[in-house]
Image (tube, rainbow, N blue to C red; front, side, top):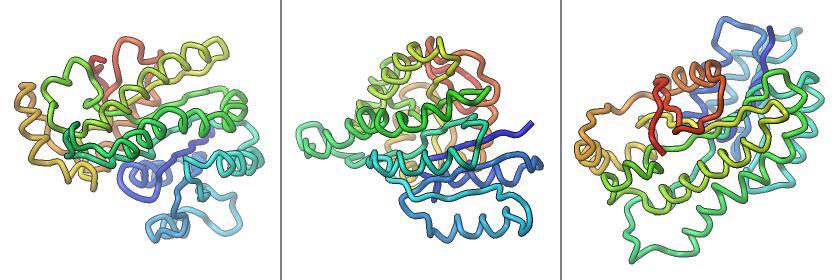
Length: 259
């Protein structure tokens, strides 16, 4: 059975690992729409050459998309609609920002803080709206946004010195997904958030020292994992979930983390 996937923020890190995994799976029926602000990234162009066989329908499409630009989102949605007549089965919101990872509340640039809050709330709505008709056409209708354990209220006291704006913005994203997902459930849409793990990316590496200390305060010894391992877990969870994450956020390993 063919499946269509749309991944945002796909030129590096977890997003790139997701695209690589989906096109490398021994399943030629996967159609992957990779969106990014940098469509000419060498990593993606190399995948296109490896994945798309002359004379056959492409398995990987790459589109320029700044998730903060609603006009670009509508443009891409209009084109994607002609490529996947059966709709988008899996929409994965991976693109993210962490502008002030080590800045204390007293020293925050509040304009940047507002930008990050907007990125995880208003911009998410503007991004998803144009694609909703395509998601509703699908039989699968799954929408997933990547979140973080740093957004957990239960764990917040342990992560008290890491990524203040990022944590608050992702907590807002969690609420948005739960509320919007509840409203869309009547139309068969399953909307959830997934914590991808502590991943070996530019963002994850920059906070290694503080992350190890915070995990120790939680009594956790979670290791940092490669982006490929995270992607494998995220895809497995996305395919397996049958209900929205109302009791907590899903983790890449299949467990449920508290809100």
